[in-house]
Length: 382
Image (cartoon, rainbow, N blue to C red; front, side, top):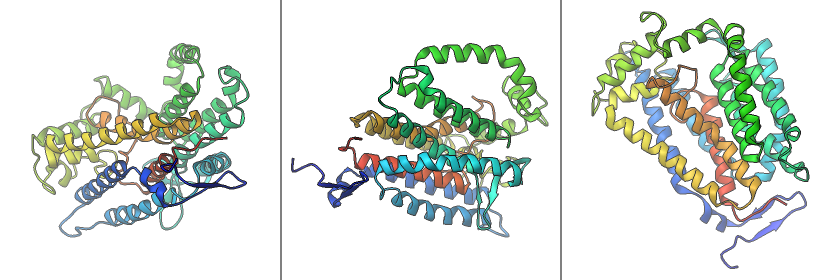
């Protein structure tokens, strides 16, 4: 009994805890998060470096964004995780409104309308969906826990809201983020017990509808990316990104060319080096050794997160903890896979490393809330 956290339950089920709760603070996952972020900042510097202006505006934005992300991380440790679920349940309706507003008045960049200009930075509402949809889903399941959760109709509100979210994001257009949110949402439903029949029927319907979706749902550039992945397309145009990424990765060799010495990066042959293809920049300058180091850090981080989640005794704590981090895992796999040519190219940044303030903040917030749950792992939802 002496090893348990001393708590005082309040009327709203929040928890006041003393400093002994920090014995449950997972230092390993936090340190790996910081290390990956600092390496990411280093390669944002490298990808945007020029002799005339060594420190670009992107580097400064990412640096200030990282400082703010650390503040966000520790702020996420303050409220009880059940409070985060309640806030997320209400806040997600606000996210839907922001996604609608983005389609009407959003800021346009690189042919897409995905951001809301907030003067000092641009907010990407679809990133908020990654953070708040798991909270909405798990809180919904919790308040309806007296129903049989294995009945498909009980999942209809979740699937409906997920479909609305993905459609709004596809309209921006942002296929990559829509796929990540859809995959994360379906993963939570699978953990919650939606049943394998849903996925079997869903796969059959998707297969039948594939020709229609290909013709009417995908943009021409999205079709080109799939064609390139299948080995088709003009090398000088459609295959350019993939070819340049392959050249950058291959030319890095075993130890790399050295920081700031990557020719594909410095001569601007590699598109989007500071964002989607930052892993290719790293491979060129740090080589296979650097790539293996990054892959090892991500693997240790994800293993640690799953290990902590497996220790949680309450089902809803597990659902929330896994739901809040699964988008980070999916995004990392997809980004590295597309850079290595194993998956089609989609606009998904590498979490913790790619340039992007919204993505960085949401990633740190997700890991901070997960840490919150880990620190309170002796509690149960009542």
